Length: 589
Image 1 (tube, one colour):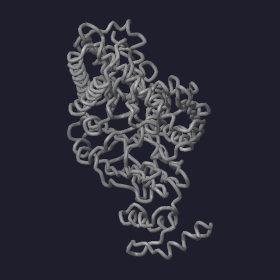
Image 2 (cartoon, helix red, strand yellow):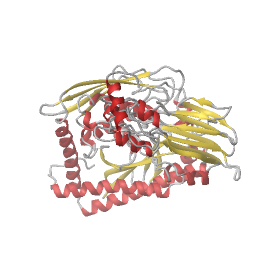
Image 3 (cartoon, helix red, strand yellow):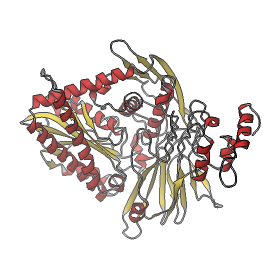
Image 4 (cartoon, one colour):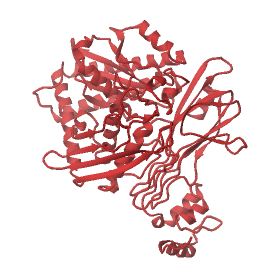
């Protein structure tokens, strides 16, 4: 097993090898997307790939979905801990998805890992993860919904299992998996795409090992780890030493309407070995509903947040993780225990990032963003295609508003923080499923007012062309994304059935099995981002520009920004100056 070496790595060679290893992970991701069957992977790119050292340490992670690192790293830890017992051989592959017995973070994320042998020696692992649209459970796509009360309701649990033995698929195990899931052809196609991606990664690694000897590559990897560690510790010196507190809250858990607090204490220490510690004591106990995080999900979330704020250009390998220390109460919302449901865990992951941003805003406000959309608005439609009679499950995570920043507005309608999937093109949706998009666009006035405005949210209205079941998980429907430095909150999200009709009704943010009859419409709206800085400090010309682009209404320009616009949308400078003077003095608008 190649893990460490006494040889020092030449810095140029280490850089070349490091970029080669990164490119392998990226190429694996491209191959997976291009060969997948489901729209969730081939169109939305809900997948990730990575390369690990033979001891399970992360070497390279493709720039895909940050939270997926938790599942791959969790499974690698399980394998590495029992490595001898596995008796791995060339051509083996291990599959898993279980958050409590396999290192996953929720059941739809199917992780595959393959060992790589060079000249008879285990030298590395290649891994990928793909979000399967359905993994069984009580209703179509329920593994991604947020209102289950135990993980057993969310789908088939797969502990680490040898699915391929010396290049031979274990058909009995694969059949057991497929029999418990909807959409067999799609699931099988995505499985084959994942195995093809692993084989590509193996080939590329062997090419690299043939070009350099194993000792040289081991030395390069060790140096890459040490370099990332040194860089992060150096960057931590730029963060003022101290302890910073912040508390945010989830709207609810899908079962009750009680908010659930997420508390974090961030401590930055300097000295000879700068480090950052995050303690989540005071966070709510694990929830009755499906928004719980398991430990691997918390690790991935914290590592993302630290990288984003402290060292965005440093590779997030095993060395990067060394200066980061995490504590979280057991059986809490962010460190749940079996059998807590976890299908909507990304809502909580997003809120953890917001809380960390809030804490670090007290130290480096110029590096953070105000609260963003703060939830992964996942919508799921399941039913039967009228023409073919085949079952289908459609999954999509909608973007929202990014929080305002210290020097610029938040971005509109984007995936934020720990998710990074694409939207599903309207043409692809309407071709694949009995659904029709009636409206798709940004929501005016949803960005939090500020010197730098929060990003706008998205509204997507989908009409059912045949009866379907609707499920979802989201948040920020009650507690809006907060602003920073005097910025105002962003707008809340919501789900509405048949908007603007006599039968209009609101749907809970975490829900499953809502019957949507033929011709009925579900309107999904995400949350906007919070503003940064006082709205009265925003350049009136920027307000007028937003008004002209339909992002800000005439009323919001006046009431939030103190900007009076003419009928043509130009700034009335005299009226604006007078209005802002009254607002700053606390007078009526």
